[in-house]
Length: 79
Length: 222
Image (cartoon, rainbow over all chains, first blue to last red; front, side):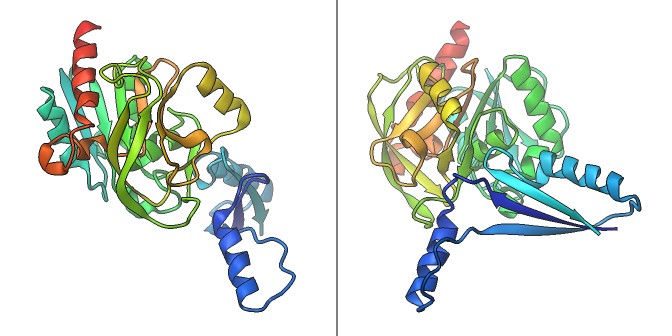
């Protein structure tokens, strides 16, 4: 079973890298980009076959390691 | 007094930190990240700067899950002293031994220069040898030193006098100019600047030496 985790900085946490990307896009002539948030995607290949169990396990992985919940939020997609 | 200095794959200030502890009179043991126990009788654990595990995932995140991290956690829970510098500070926040997180520098650049610090709290054995408000020149060398904490956490740090050092001129966007913070029991200090790189006249300054000497003196009294 595959899982995909998206980790983003929490709303309200200033994303300085996203801001730099937004600025660069403006410099390139892409007008109207009002905001850019940069995060990361982590793909997992799991032995687990039950979707609910897989989701619970991946959430535990996010809490313990994959995200720093002080500053980051995460989203888990299974399948 | 005994100090243990940890080495992770990618640590690069471990030797400097050991030398700084030794110069202050500590007996120093070197500890590997796979060690699941600290040597007998260790009083203070030094978590050094560097790029542990290549800064993969997040700075300090993998090191915070290593066997030695569990031993450091137990040591701290027993009231043991822990000093985390630069990457070591990142490791301690990832371990949640210290609150907050260290994000990419506001200016996005790696910063490597001497900065001026202000001693914000002298109420710890790490900072007891300084005067409140004293200005120190200490080097920084980091890409992710932008200290971030929620409003409630910041209020707690300020209310409990747990901000050890502040930048005189904020180089990296840290909230409230924070350069170093203390744990609630004041025995865990994390800081981005490198006091171990300012303990010998040949370093260009010795303003970091009083941190190690003060710790030695404070622990002798305790």
